[in-house]
Length: 279
Length: 67
Image 1 (cartoon, rainbow over the protein chains, first blue to last red):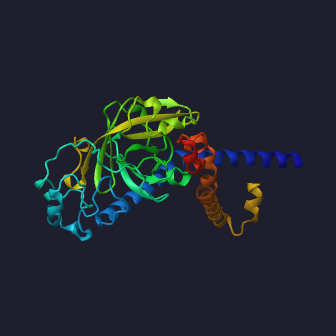
Image 2 (cartoon, one colour; image 1 turned 90 degrees about the vertical axis):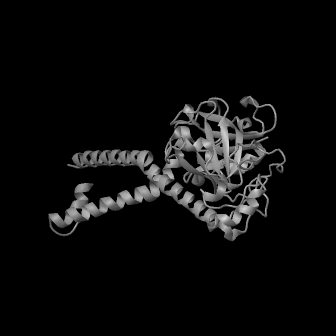
């Protein structure tokens, strides 16, 4: 009898372990995506809420502090005067201000070289400060960019490497994201082609980066890829660059995939969406 | 094991079945809420940064390492 009991208990344990493993696979493949979608939507909503109320946590590079009074957000008319001094990204108004095109032609301006040097603004660790759009990944693809690359930060969105340049700033704005699990934000990174747009907004400006070359595969210790001028990127002079990092292979961690882009255009949000997002 | 639990449950077969279902759901909840979130970072899917370490160690080591 005891033999039978031992065998039965052992069998039941095996079945239990198998069930737990199946549940874990469900968790990793499905549930992390649900959680990440929830969390990232929450972060984006928080950002947009914050932006629509005119409280902005960081100045856009080159933005003048006196852009517009914080109460002008609901009345685009009032911000006409500051807009006349074109070039300064005005304060965060609504995303598609109807009066935006009145004073400014929607020109693609190259990044201004007179902007102050990239000193990372006070991004707060674990807090979102921008939203990224990549048309190549689909129209619905939008992810918040949070400060820091900690495990818990990357569960909620993309993570900005602390110590790298600010968004749109001089240097290298480096961002890490999950390739798989937690919503698979960077699953399609290998599909990026030279010329593809990577668009970000911090509530005051749109930043359009253009991918420079196809994804570069490297090892995890290759920290030079997020240097201000990454040696292997083909960039030679200091500029305003963007680096995306994710894991390679998709479910592994032996390598990393790197995509470099350079800033092509900056425009205030009052000018409407950049051309890359309008197609 | 399961037979032993079944025999310990009170009530008739229906009540036992309901209690079993509740117990199973409780176990699944604990797994999804506490056990799996702990176990998931041990897998390599989260290693997406370049710093030569796991993603979790990234933030602190970054500044010294990035040149």
